[in-house]
Amino acid sequence: MERAYYVTTPIYYISGQPHIGHAYTTIVADVLARTARTFRPTFFLTGTDEHGQKVANAAAAAGKTPQEWTDELVPRWKALFALYHVSYDDFIRTTERRHVEKVQRVFDRLRASGDVYLGTYEGWYCVNDETFWLESKLVEGRCPTCGREVQWLSEDDWFFRLSAYRDRLLEHFERHPQWVQPRSVYNEMTAILAEGLDDLSISRSNLDWGVPIPGGGVIYVWLDALLNYITAIGWGEDDAEFHARWPAHTQLVGKEIARFHTIIWPAILWALGEAAPELVFAHGWITVAGQKMSKSLGNTVDPFLLAERFGADSMRYFLLREAPFGSDFSYSEEKIAQRHNSDLANDLGNLLQRTLSMLQRYRAGVVPAGRGPGELAVRFGALPVAVRERILDLRFREALESVWELVTELNRTVDERKPWVLHKQNLGDDLDAVLYDLCEGLRWLAILLHPMMPERMTEMWRQLGNPGRIDEDWSVSLAEWGGLAPNTRTAPSASLFPKIEPTIP
Ligand code: MSP
Image (cartoon, rainbow, N blue to C red; front, top):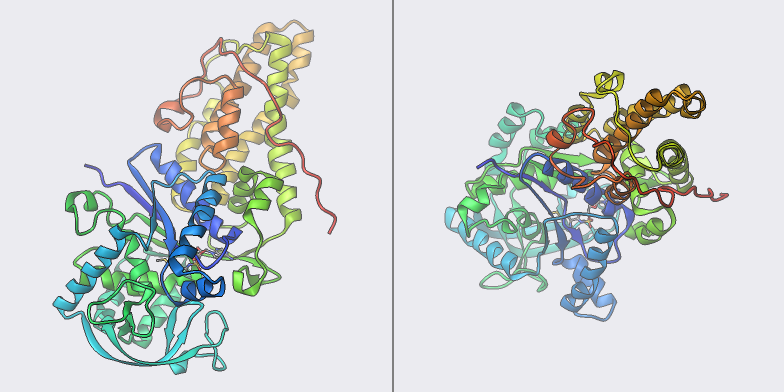
């Protein structure tokens, strides 16, 4: 059996309301999953990271138990993903039994193999990032990642023998230079490895919100959390099912947590006798005034309001189109409105509307027969393969740019072939050919853009009168120019992307 294309997002700390940064990674993973599903078995996992000091503190501040708190918040996160049309196959919560039991099993296994031993931890801890820091790594006495105050910990802890995996990690990085992307993050990680690795404390003795360890204390939230990627897919339960998905094909993370996923995570997997993921991609941040958008900085933007104002699919388009994937980019409502109005309303929405209204006027809304493959077929025949490759390579912006060449070409066809003139001159065959090509081109666009804008493209598909599934195997639906059946009856209705008034700053 072909191994599934397994794609994951980080599991999100449920210490508060989701913001658009959380939606971002999940949307990207969704585009990958939807694309992969058109040609191979796929599995897409997301979820929530519910243990640890940070969540316990948030619950306490709200006067709730951590369990009450997370139970109340999870529906909010699920609602967010539903609103943004995220098609995850599974949503894991680290408080679920299926997870907790297996985390304990991992702990026992690692203890038995000698990868985990008892020692004393003395050092600093950042609650916000749930990270242990050596004194030498602090920046002016604060957390080097988030800049917040750290607290001194001195406790008897369990340790994971991370240092023993350094050579293997170095070798893995050398042998698989593409396994961590982008290159800047790969370089940063190899620099960390070159400096040397300390063993990692993997328990917290003064905390009770976590996976309990026999004899006292709880498992360090990061070990608990990383394991979600394998506990959700049957590790330790059904080996065949597990290996039908693992190793993951693509693990998406924000760059601030690359170290956990590319140094600690593979070492744990190796200690368990499993392979490292094929690719960890550490993407950039959505920033506000040059700073990472984050709850603790108080500069977050509510994704629920954004979807209401711009439409969930327009937001998806913006996030994918605005910057090369991997780079930081700044959030601005003007830019979202601009992209929506120019690319979506003008270029794409108008094209659909003009085409369907000409078809209505000249051919009673019914698609005529075309002339068979012509110039457009030659020029765009290879587009589906190119788009798929770019998406799976995480070059979303380029994928959209190449699809837009077809959008531009179809708009040019309308302007140059002037169907209204062909109609006036009684050139019926020419008019048929142009109208057919426009409808066929739009059918292609709906399919190609569906992973990025699933709801709006399904509506476009419906207005074009196409039967069947929009997300069918591309090698069937886009096999050749001319897949659209003549006599298809179109169903024009409301504009796909109504224009939005930009806000005056
Ligand atoms: N719980 C850990 C991850 C455990 S994974 C085993 C965590 N959670 S988090 O809630 O802080 O979410 C982190 C992820 O949310 C980031 O890695 C990134 O994918 C996404 N983002 C959070 N803020 C973001 C931006 N401002 N911009 C882009 N992505 C952002 O870390």
